[in-house]
Image: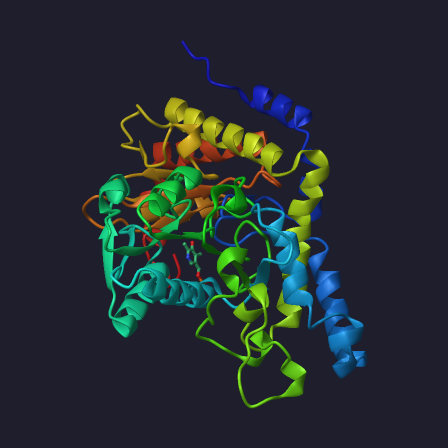
Length: 429
Ligand SMILES: *Cc1c(COP(=O)(O)O)cnc(C)c1O
């Protein structure tokens, strides 16, 4: 018996989808089903003209006057305020700036300084072993510098790791490799109950799932501009600090953009109040313009139910993909497994499949067929090699999901992934 949705069912779901029109905000290459918006979001149609305007008019013609005339100087905070609406942050508490790695350096350092004063005996950072490596590298470097230790645990070990030695619990909300999502309010409360500060990385959450930093009472957060925010390659990232901490410490990259009165050019540093001090130096205006176009695509969804509606659709898309892969590919001796939680409350906006052999080549064969996902290497132990598919509800439809699952079925059934051309690794996977 077969109750799985048919192609006609999927088309009917698209026809009823209240978010369907938002797809027109994007340029999606002909013949492509793009399931990698979790790695690099697609281009908003508004971006080329807006970037051209910044280049030719603001830079080319208005030149230095643009800092005032076109609001360049305030742009990081203006875009930050727009991002704030997506992550449950108050206006004036988010700034779009620098990269995720650099912002993490700033907030983790500030958190360690705060803990050193409030809880001098706490000298441990706890994070997840399968966190995105750059987060762990930054933490490792800061621990060396501050004489702290970094303790890495598996997700199920987090509660037991919250001992009186812990200064900061630093987690990525949605795991980049498995798509598993932490319970932000519960874990934040558990960290606080033991006296630790809570730092969240929202790289795979902002614009993908509803986030309420204020409601959770978190302490610090960072996130990425080029993934679900569709800000373009190398787009500025963002940083949030709970207002209760923002004025207590300097962040270590005390550049002039974080100064209280930068245009007095005083020789001594006086940090600006609030999130402004988390800026460092001059920001990339062309990239910020593109990022704003990307963030605006998410704000356009506010008229159609906003992040809650995007979440409903995202879960419907990922549920459908899991079901179709199960029905059409699994159980046919192909050895496909599921690394993403089945429980929707524990799932981000991606589906990760496992395969012992050929995961990389299968992804390459799918890309050749126009279905773009990506591959993440396993660790040979707990984590298997992964075929990763991001489902961005702004521009992915139900028919796309059906086609993606069907292309995967064909790649597996034909065995075409075994061809040499799909088995040569590129520098970037
Ligand atoms: C994508 C991602 C980053 C990226 O950091 P960059 O500084 O932009 O290179 C960092 N952390 C996590 C968890 C990510 O998913």
